[in-house]
Image (tube, rainbow, N blue to C red):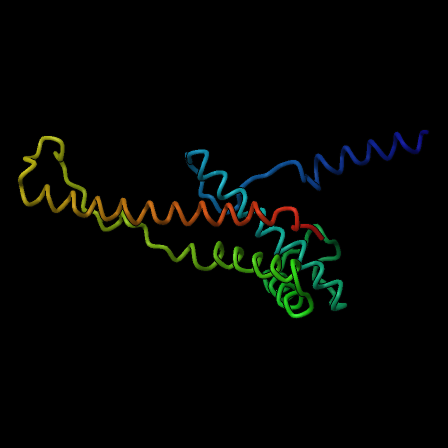
Length: 178
C-alpha cells in the first residue's frame, strides 16, 4: 500500500510540473486579446502540430532506430520526423488509416505552411479620418466602402476555410493517437 501512495505522489508531481497534459496553451497565437473562436482555432491546430511533431515524430524515431538528440521523449520535437512518419504511413497503409494519414498531413501542412501565407485583406484598406462625418456621395467615401466590402468578402472566405478545416480535424480526432 505504501508503494501505491508513493507512486500517486510521484505522479502528482510529474503531471503538475513536467508532463502537463491537462494544460493547453497556444504556442502560435500572439499575445493579446483574441475572441474565443480564434483561441479555439489556434488551440486545436497547435495540438495537431504537437501530435505530428512530437507523437508521430517519436514513432518515426522508434521505428527507424534513430537515436534522438534528446534522451527523453518529452523533450523531443521534430517536424521532419513527423512528416517522414506520415509519408511512411501513407505508403504502408490502406483504407481508413490511409485516409486519416493523408488528412493529418493535409491539415498539418495547411496550418503550418499555407495558412500563414495569407495576406490580411484589411492591410490594403486605407484608413480615413472623419469617415463617419464624410459625405456619402464623395469619391473618397465610395472608394473606401468598395475596398472595405472587398476586404470583408475575403475575410469571410478565410473564416469559412478555417471553419471547414476545424471540422475536418474534429472528424478525425478519434484517430489521433499513437
